[in-house]
Amino acid sequence: MNQTPQQDSNPGPVDVVIMAAGKGTRMKSRLPKVLHRLGGRALLAHVAGTAARIGARGVVVVTGHGADQVEASMAGGIGNASLRFARQEPQLGTGHAVQQAAPLLADDGTVVVLSGDVPLIGEETLRALVAASAGSKLALLTIEFDDPSGYGRVIRSAGSGQVRGDLRGEVQAVVEHKDATEAQRAVREIYSGVMAVPARLLKGWLARLDNNNAQGEYYLTDVVKLAAADGVPVVAHITTDALQVAGINSPAQLAALERAWQLRQANALMEQGVRLADPARFDLRGTLECAGDVEIDVNCVFEGAVSLGEGVRIGANCVIANARIEAGAVIHPFTHIEGEKAGVTVGAGSLIGPFARLRPGAQLGAEVHIGNFVEVKNSTLAAGAKANHLAYLGDATVGERVNYGAGSITANYDGANKHRTVIGDDVHVGSNCVLVAPITIGAGGTIGGGSTINKSTEPGALTVARSKAVSFPNWKRPQKKPKA
Image (tube, rainbow, N blue to C red; front, side, top):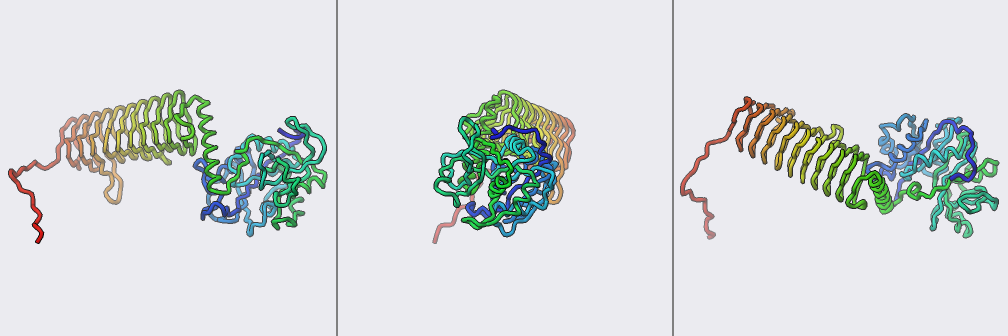
């Protein structure tokens, strides 16, 4: 809620500054801290995505440690926002970071300051913060912690202001933990690191910052006391959602936030009717759309964009990325579906796995069966086709009702180029066959087990290509020579 009534003032365009210059020493990693992943995405990507969703006109990312790597990670841009970078070298504090961004900010907008290592800040929270700023105020996102150690304390006057049933005065300053008195350290309301402020006011305060403090740094929080001294209202938007303001400083914190985030995703799916065997053993690292009566067993990982149709069942320990699985399909345990850019489609009523692998470009029709230890890559299987075990189909077009035997493969690569195999409707391919592409197996044909086929076959033909069996009666195996 806002401490003061929301006004109708127009905040103007919104520009976002994302602080992403820190080294993240406690992560003990060569990877810049903001590029560590949560829910399958870099921490910075989460923050940038939220900036795009609030309709930011421009985004300035302040980089420093690993700047080239961080900037390269943003090559795809941020929605419709203009993207620019400001280097902070050396890193002399949060105020110094925003000072580097200031020349890139237009005077007519509201600036929202975010941290690249606080990934779960919410869109609606930021919209409310911008509204609280109202084009004329400094708005801070705050929260109360039972143990606020290490955080900047929000210092208020003794005046009145009804908020959630307790009396709060006007915000006068934010004091960092190392600079706080014992009385100030007893304050439980802390500044989250997120603010919204008119750009024209922010620039003036940034120019007046000094580093006369315990850490010898330029604190962004000092703009609060400067605003109060200038008579500019400072308002607090108080959140109770600790996940939104949780920052990452260590692998342990990252793991804890990952679990909390995943549990939130699991609960949202269950509210939609998805049945999860155990929400504590569920990982969503992208987007997951589910129709009615979907069931998901334990230890499943969903990456990229995945959609599950009506009544789909996902067995335990599956990894599914960038796939559309249509109504009634069953994905048995330990199946790996990796759609990447080409995507994978599993038709209605199909049975996949266990221990199957569908690679990019696998397009399966209705009631297709792909069994254990079968791999399908860049291939189309029409309705009713079956490859039940120990087989490979690569760069193939497979017709309806084809039965593809155990141990059979399409030899699609000649050492330089890929070639396609076409298998007509109602073909039966026996076990342990090699189909050497490019080749077409005519509709209704049969390939005898153990055959290597390197020429196309006519429809309805039986084709066998193997040596005549030769038997030698009473043949003796070689014997080991006795040791001397």
